[in-house]
Picture 1 (cartoon, rainbow, N blue to C red):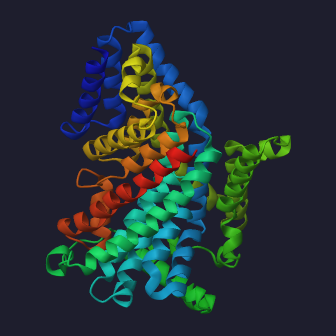
Picture 2 (picture 1 turned 180 degrees about the vertical axis):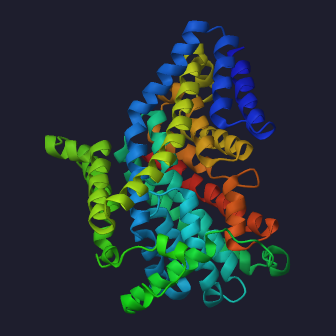
Picture 3 (picture 1 turned 45 degrees about the vertical axis):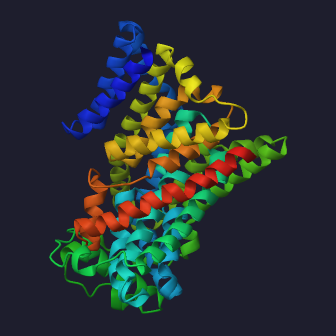
Length: 478
């Protein structure tokens, strides 16, 4: 009966979110309450499980999520990400789709997915005819889609990645070391396969591009911003791209030239330094005795806080106090939403644990020794894929799947980091029309609904399938 009640609770959350448009936080709390009460956990014990689960997951990832979002917000304010996009566009030419997917997967995960697509889409529309006159736009659109979500789920500090790490209580350093190569490979291989599908006749510009699509209100502004960045990267004088504008909105969004004058590698230090520290700590830990200083600096919370301090210093020194405060305020607003839904995912997992359902679920994840890894990885992947497909959010799907699986992950005999990567892989599957990101993506890239399905939905589905064998192989190795 516990398994039946758990299934009803998950279906209840999905129906509330999809059919009745209830916020995921409310839906997951309702489902947790139903499961605890229906399974006989008890009134007081259900409340304790919900609050305790929330607190436990906040202790694991609360600071990580907050620091990561704030770093991204500060770097966005300094124009760092826009200049990275402009530099890539200038340097790689026709290989732009591969460069874009790789950069979005490996460099950009510290900022939220909506911001990534706003930054990348204007450049994609401008560069499409140069990359490929017939298929440039869909190829770049697919590359952007898979690059964003490969980084989001596989690469630290992608928010879905951090959430899964916390819910499954795995080492962030190990997830970084093992997940980043899978994320990069997934982005590049999927971009190649998508290109082959376009050559086979997938795209029909007459139906897949919407010439009357209303662009995102910030689209023109970002086009001008990126064009200015390209001019700077090419050596155009700062005066020509600076004070000439008379558009007050553009003046508000303009980034002072003193921020641009810093070398790009310096402006990326808030991302690169934490990643180096975390990776160093992880590799040292694998080798054995870890010096106290390396263990301290390699701790994910400390490493990301160091990155935040660097970002704050760069932003304060180049933009001033007021602009830095505005960037932090924007980051705080995003952080609150993400922390709440992540914490509620921990609540659901705690209620599942309180029901004793782990014994029943453990049987589902147990097989003969030769197939235990494959069964566990495939089940974790399928649960995440189904939840994402139904709910329409990669992060919520991953969090819900991790919440369901976390109570039994220790009994599967499979390394928890592999289970986490399987969840990440499945959570990418088939991002489609029930996602707000889908409609933003469609509008920014000027696609019809059919065109968005052929690019974003197909690319994320391919990415989920491409990454699954890599996770399976990893499961037999670690």
